[in-house]
Length: 212
Image 1 (cartoon, rainbow, N blue to C red):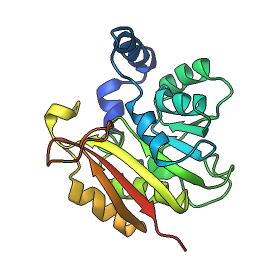
Image 2: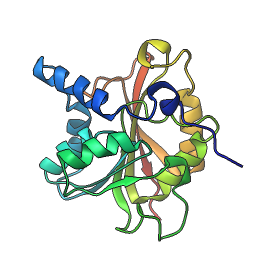
Image 3: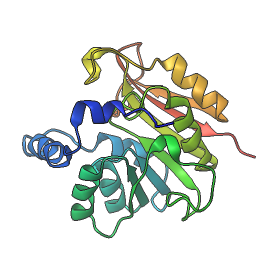
């Protein structure tokens, strides 16, 4: 049976890469902080750690972490976004793959370099997955982590923080998927800058894979 189309593809089409890159270039030129996600990740693990940028888009987070000394891999389903990432950082591995279909086999391109110390899913990755694939995607990401590794994910919980007509994922949903995948919650923040979560419409969640 054919998998449902991702919500990201529904709202962005198949050629969003250049538009997305231009948007963040304008933000950076205006003086906006465009590296909050990478900064938080760098606070959680030291340089040299192996990081998967899941739903990496144009590679903004992975490229910044690589500049800081992390061993980064990017994976995304949108080929137009990966085209931009490859031009910006041709030496980093950029993999075209569906997060809900990472599989269990060691021959999958994402798995060939071994397990990760961290998987980061920034930019509303989880709510923009294809409907019904979210639990499978979380399980696949969790399986890529070494024991003690971290899954860090930030996403909107209401329409003010999502490019969608309605919210698709609750924190209870997400915590259930993480728990079923062998992950334990560590921290919940309101922003990538580290503000404590206060029940608002955006949350950054840090979970760890239970050590064997």
